Image (tube, rainbow, N blue to C red):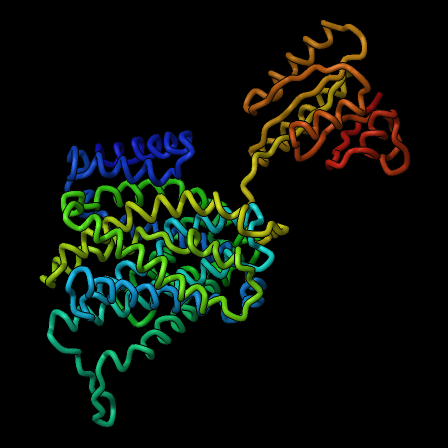
Length: 540
């Protein structure tokens, strides 16, 4: 079992990195690694790990949905009105019906069996959509109108609806009739008649329980201070989020995944600093969970059953997406302020399938439902086609179809490389500048450019600065640059060239900085630099 975990982590990581270097989404490499390591090819992954695959996938989906909740913007969702709500029901429902009709035509299914296949294929993949939408938010694409937020919310709601309908259809097809439920007063109703109430209950209780969990986490982690650092915060929050999913499986009256997403959403409002710490922690957790999710996803794909239904499966997927979902997207955005380009973005941005299909695709076959083998094959095909395609198309088409807006760093983690510039000369003050920039770099896990502008030939002074740089920045990625020219102009030019976040330089003198600046270099850089400047004071 330990060997299997090692293979999954190492091969999954490097498979993803190789895919990135080939300009292909990392998940493609991870899924391919899973296919190679799984029972279809090499049988490297042990049966114990494969038996635990569903549980491991649940943990990974929990992590990504918590990330989604921590990245949602309440204001943008409010601006969209009912668009996010409609995206949660109409595209998935229209796709499921289109798939059902196509299955009746191409596979000779009855309507109930075709709709069961439609529920499998219509569910959207949080594992693909959530990280992609959060990345778009961090880059600013579509944020002005809250398009990524609407897609995130809609995908979570659609999965609630389709999983409920899937469970009812499964009971109908296996038992031959719907289960009758006796209400108080002797009124007999079917599960189908209760479906609208179940949907409202699942969503309403999921949101309520998420709010209560957010309140509890704020009390434990922020007010009572049970934890000492961000790592412990994330560990406790992840454990409680997983508890919600487990409780939802034991008591299926609320959506556990929606409750997890709601927890992150309400944490932003209740305690933004805690939400920011958790955002960073769940980013780290996702780095590991992503590998397990997609490698085990690849290992679960049944390649042997794809051959007979390949062409038919592709046609059904095309009908469901290009006809069913297109109608749903049009109805969802009708009357909104979205342009036709933004509506077109829903095709790559809201179509990926992976986790839900892997979880429920084999259930009809296991339950002995006629056509179950074809359902499993088309579910596997949907993963192989739409997951890589969606992961590739979202970043490719977002700049072409969406407008770029201002990123709100209080709502989303902005992942970018932090570079600091330390401007030094051969005076003793250079040591203090290096110490200060080292402190800042360690806090932000940043890199440092040490810049010395040469005005006179002084090889011994330059060597002294190199030695000081190696000594003070030994544990920090850095490079030492020597340039010539006007000192203030060179500092600003190099800072802009390397896109540094801050400039750190020294100032001599005894009087306060806001009273007088001693030295024209500090004065000029402060006046001309568009980049923030930190001045380190010293004694001449």
